[in-house]
Length: 210
Length: 210
Image (cartoon, rainbow over all chains, first blue to last red; front, side, top):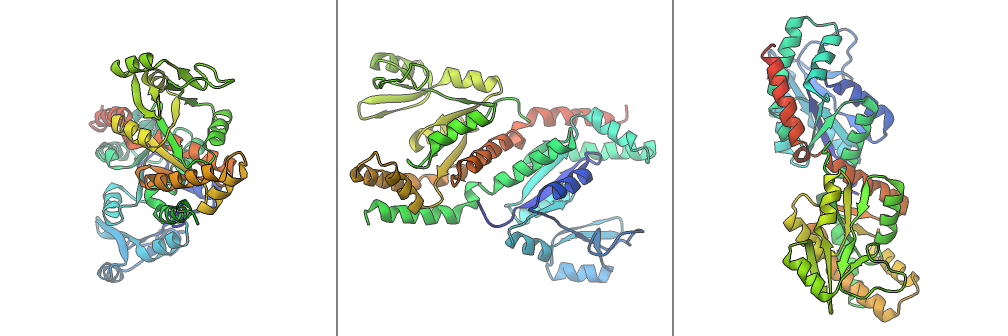
């Protein structure tokens, strides 16, 4: 019942199908916005500023950090990646649920900064299936696949920090469950404080006999 | 993803429409069972043992208490009311979500005994609407209506103890939201412990390189 949007972080194993899920969620349901990250890495062919990423110079990015304009940021190899605060806040205040797709370290930073954040972890139904999906992509060498599995092994240790675990067996079913989990947050008691206060006061007036 | 059923307590103001909601939830969705309470009050015309209530003598009921066969019980005026444990546990173990419709004191007792219990509070959209519904029933005297409003005023103080607040504006929409909230519990991380443990172990084996 809360009118403010819910901030949702989606993480999951590489190969869990997060990209497809996000795309389908936004196609299928109206009330979502995907947060666009900021980065200092160079745009790849076909990537657009403000669509895939907000592309910044290192100096610009460090300015954003200094201005506290990012919800979280991290450095990988030589590049910065971060979540711009302004866009997210604007959407949440407009009542739109905002999805951030980030990895576990970032997810925990966001939860620490904004404790109401909903953390969702997407996983294939089994480790066997995860391996199969990674191999079937066919675009990666065995070396890359094995490095991803080692990374998945690290990521698995963080699963318990998430609020919900979503098994991606079939995309449509998983998207519906994700929608169900996110929408149910609006009815959580802590998101209904204003309503509770209002109706409690009004009933108290009636109860005394107007 | 948990295969065990979820225990759900539904409370709400008298006049919130709980009875209609429960009936519709069970008609519309498959995976629910309604818990039948035990009582020492005499059956009314048309009531059947095991359908509206399990009817017991005072001695039988006190025997149930001694045997710890009730999840919770309470005494109103001269009668006992309680929730038999065996039926609820059997349904939960079979994977069925079980609904108890009880008032706040009982709800809090159940939550204390079984902390995984999901507490839902059903409310009309406003105090004005609550009053209107109580008056429109037309079967009660103004005295009864006012006593209900005073009781509602007490009940409102307990709303914050519940996990979710469900506004019953239209029955169909409220039933769907209730279903959504209950089903999302199956994906909560604490209900996925076994899955997390299994996939973490399996990936660790792959990650080491089989």
